[in-house]
Image 1 (tube, rainbow, N blue to C red):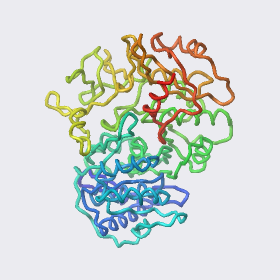
Image 2: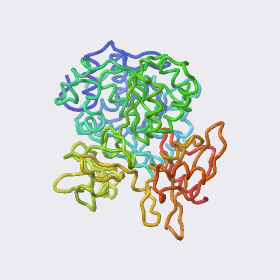
Image 3: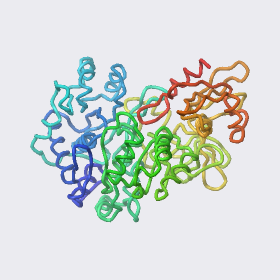
Image 4: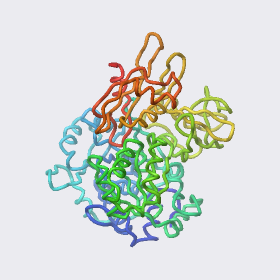
Length: 526
């Protein structure tokens, strides 16, 4: 029985309670909870035998699959610090990331062996790389299968204040490693295993046993890469609640293949990241009526990016048995809540004693606009970056608050209206325009498939709003005036794009997040 809110202790309790339940479904086969726990024990012992110790950073540089979750659990078991690695990064980006994280070990897909061999020559601290061999590329480093043959060592020392590192996506700058203590992460990002149990979050560590045996028996398919925070939150939350996960690499987002998999595996829950995934999934359902039997899908949930109300409504009509949910949060705050639709801004969230806005270094009041902030179960800072830590984590009225980059206004009814990322806000003619609101409106045009909005310097207005859009197959590109006419009933005049740039494809991360640096560069050419 778990004696502390350490993620390894909690998982081991769940595995002991439901050893025969399927934990992971993949193309490689099914793993029960007992088998997943045993494999993680072997890996943990193998890492220990190769010199990885409590507090050492271990990079997870893989596509989705059982190995990703096994490796994370193994690192937890020895008190090591796992961190996510964007598999789209190139040599210089990886070199920066591994150096910033002080990585001692990296567990990587065999396809990444060439770049790993190049990077590790410059990183003296990186002494161990472990290849998840796919039998296609010869591995020069110790292999995953070799670690799985290591005799199980036994229980390792660990504490609920051990940390995991969650690297932000770096859409506006180099990624930062957010340090989450296990206890805080469990409650702030995983809701204390309370999403799938009628009794709600755990109050004591031993409650995790009841959550596993008495919760809802569901199968979840996280479609986003596990190196994205929203996806790993979903996966860990599911596995600590006794759910079954569908885990396989999605090398390119094929909406029809996703629905094929959902039907084949009987997935009850589909987890996505915003419109970049929701729109092609919606289009596939709309273009292929009757192709799939999806009556078993009870939830399609999004987190980590804008999920437009019009797209939600469309999917709701196409999946009548499913609830459509939209979680709001950030790497620095955890989950802020489930979004409530709003006529203004992106969404609405509840205000509470642990969630409010910060205005000029103080707690905000009704009618004021500031930045969403949380206290209580929050990270302890950015790894190795005291300056940025001081900017984001602030003591106010005797409590430590994590201040996100999301701008919001406190309303009169106990909710706040969230407008978007303050760092990408466009100031035009003295008015503030949040790109997310304009992007959502643009995607309601029938000819526009995807959109991102950025500011362009302007002598008259300071900045002007520029729309960067891609065209839906089968449609002609509408003129700027036609698009503005479509938007005029949805947005104030100062929010309407002053220019529009057509691109073949809007550049996004593998998880569907906007690349604001790219968008800013494209907007400058408008």
